[in-house]
Length: 399
Image (cartoon, rainbow, N blue to C red; front, side, top):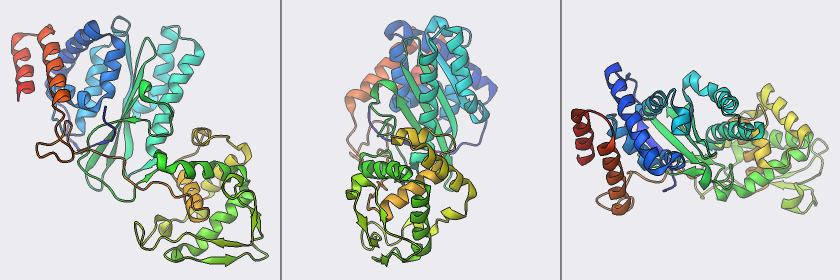
């Protein structure tokens, strides 16, 4: 699987009932054949593959590059297996809008019906919630998550498919996760897709390049609320001067303090040097437009973190109330004062599902391309649908 994130045009239209009914019918048959041939875990794995997911949606007759493919395909598959989840051995929770917020309850309901041990059910809920937090808070790319679905098998394999929208440029971006590919829920956890557009200055705290930022952020809240408050106040006062190096002598108001121990060896400093951003990636920094300290809610959350002192960055993010602004504030303090520069590279990678004919952004992966088509053709051929609908599906594959 290729790493990355898919971007599609926003689709404001509705799927006509006649099309949805046919997608459900064909989706049920394709799901049946896939599971009979390869098993439920393989089905979950294929849903996590953005190329496969996109191809499946296209075969079921939806526009390949519209944002609605994600929501309609998920909804049609969920409806297709309704009442037969135990038989298929797969379970689909969540969906679009308000339905996405019901995901934890739906997972727990299945946990009861399947007599899953409570720790296992709770872990599934935790993975669902953390994937949503990571994509809304650690990847700050301008896309607001509005669709979240959680697929899991009776054997414990799981996949997350969620989508965000950017109303400003009328695009949507889809994020895929797969349990077997994840070593760390925080560090580069996604399984990949394609992207039609890229953005500059995307704060990507899932990147391995952001390791230092995550480490210092965790240490900052452990240092105590007053220390963190003072650091943010310094940034707030001098935000407009960040295009040049500024050395500040500590006054009686800002006394010498102990910096995060693992970064500066626990030594006290009498001066503070803010980072120099001129001539690097950009002449201006996002902090220039931030106004953190006027937010009573942010103060409350930072005080809560300083009191609880999470031991890991994952625990920090998992804390109730922690969101994009909290993460961004800690990241900026880590970077501007302690030099822990995070990644500002958009994690989106590819422009086409299987590559481009002109080798841009990479050559067509013929083997994957052919395997995807052949598997879908085999599944359609074995499905129990009428000949006309089967021929139409096969023609879509051939086209």
